[in-house]
Amino acid sequence: MNRMSEFVFVTAQYESGDWESAPLVPANVIDSIARYTEIPVAPVGRVVPLGSTELFRYPLVFLTGHLPVRFTSDERQTLSTYLARGGLLFVDDHNHDVDGMFHKTAVEELQRVAGPLVKLPKNHALYRSHFVFEDGPPNTSHELNGWGDNLLHPYLMGASRGERLSVLYSNKDYSSEWNFHPDNKRFYSVDNTRFAVNLVVYALTH
Figure 1 (spheres, rainbow, N blue to C red):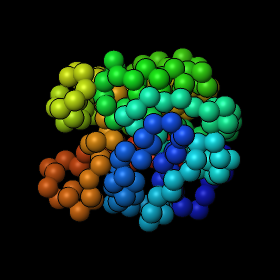
Figure 2 (figure 1 turned 30 degrees about the vertical axis):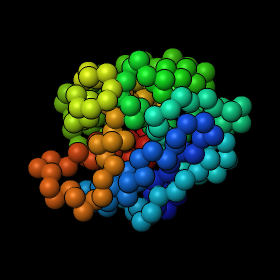
Figure 3 (figure 1 turned 180 degrees about the horizontal axis):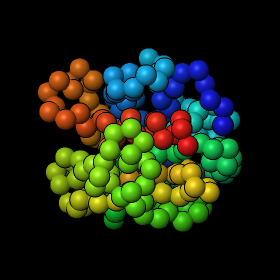
């Protein structure tokens, strides 16, 4: 995996589903990286097709949506190569519903490419890569509010290659939690995008 001079937040564009369902997330994460770290960061994110070899340029790729996910053969092959080269794919269920079709189909597709998804322990390095989250993944206000399965999801799932996380899967709906303009952070007593910083730092340092 090539390390670029500045971090670029990448959203995966896949042929099925609604990959563009959280359009404000990139700007919010970029703001957090600039705000809390000294990591050089590009001022705007990029959208990269999941089947494109351009993916190989970036250490972290974000994928989300509400609708069923069915990767094409090119998307599977490119994603498999991306993970083998050291990339980290972060997939977040915008429905936060373990009975929903995004969850069922995305997990099926990810396991075809990366192998079984297992629970991440609370002491995983991801939760200490920058900010410390003693209880594992921070909860979101959307887990018990609105649509979804009305459950708090106490863990994330992942697949690893050796000791390095290659796929991170979330039912916590960070896509909704982080989908607001960065200027609105002043209204939050605790910035809920801090976990995104951990994701970026982990992807750059492991």
